[in-house]
Length: 65
Image 1 (cartoon, one colour):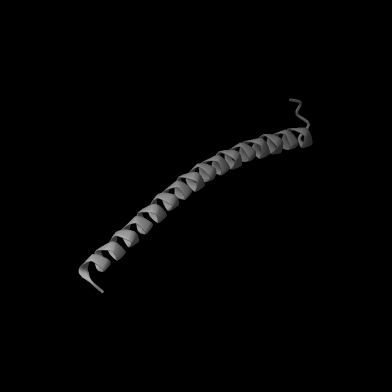
Image 2: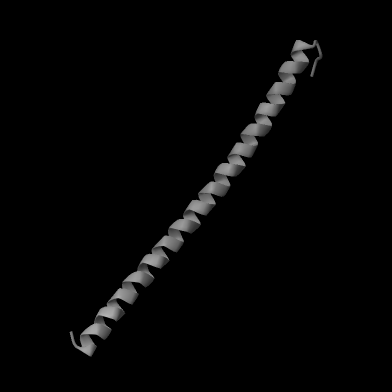
């Protein structure tokens, strides 16, 4: 392999790695946004469950809301 061939191979490899890293960075950002949305939804569901539990306990003890 000549020096020029080696340089061309290194250039192609570098470009390929750069493209892969860019793609992975985009995917990580998407996954992070989805994880944040999931966490917010879980917190909302936990709040709803707590409110329902309080209502059930109030009904069982004879309290009115």
